[in-house]
Length: 138
Image (cartoon, rainbow, N blue to C red):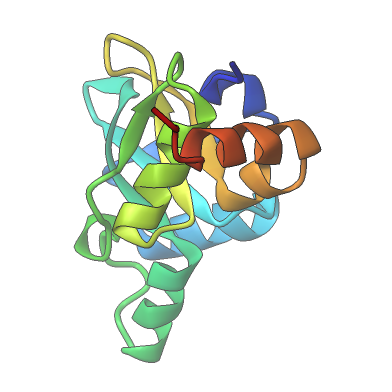
């Protein structure tokens, strides 16, 4: 079984929940990733929200103040445990029509971010996902 933690390869972009939209946009561009995790002021390991590059793009299109709070455009994080099999992450992405899930440990602390690309580019993962979706015969 391939676990979600096994697929984490890129550094996670995380900023405090007090970050501005501009700060999030700069970090996303610098790191070349599609999702930033906003963390609690009192605990930088606890995810409280996420901001995707699409959220930033909508903020620009809506002419929002980019020096305003990123929390104004943030969404609730969809999480999986670091010990969950990869199909759990794939299913949550499908259910919520999202491209990223936040990976946390049993204590709810940030471990990383898993993207749809992480699931699509390795044959072993695709085979495991296919097997998880295959109907069983009695």
